[in-house]
Length: 145
Image (cartoon, rainbow, N blue to C red; front, side):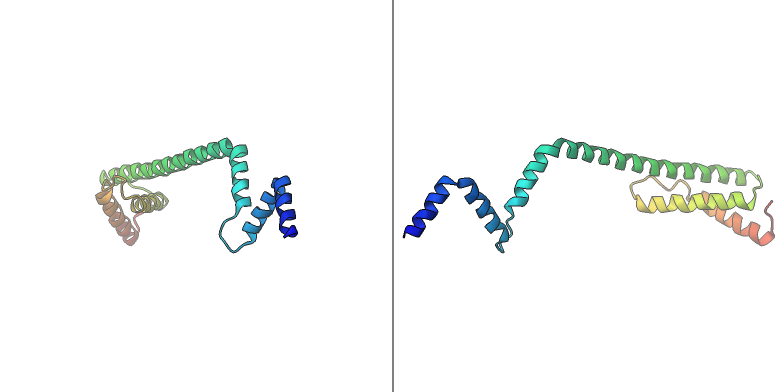
């Protein structure tokens, strides 16, 4: 009985040690509660909360800029495809290297369109078909410049 009184007296006069001991026991116990991590999280939020928010904002802006840059590349590829198609349709001759470059634009544009179904497409379908047919014909006839 005296032993329990001593324990109660210790708890009464040293509550901080009691709390630390209780947290440690809770952390060790097989229960999925970790008070030290919770306290560390509160301290981190207090010290770095604004910095974390700024980093999240910057990350979101970088993601938006990357998406815009990717879309801009797709639009440039589409412009190259359409311009080149017009030149071929109007009888202008091109080197094989130029054709190969535009075929890379076609691949890049089609991959972007597949990955982004909401992107307005269907603007190069006939041009792409005509360019591929022209390329195949020019290869067969050895007609490149």
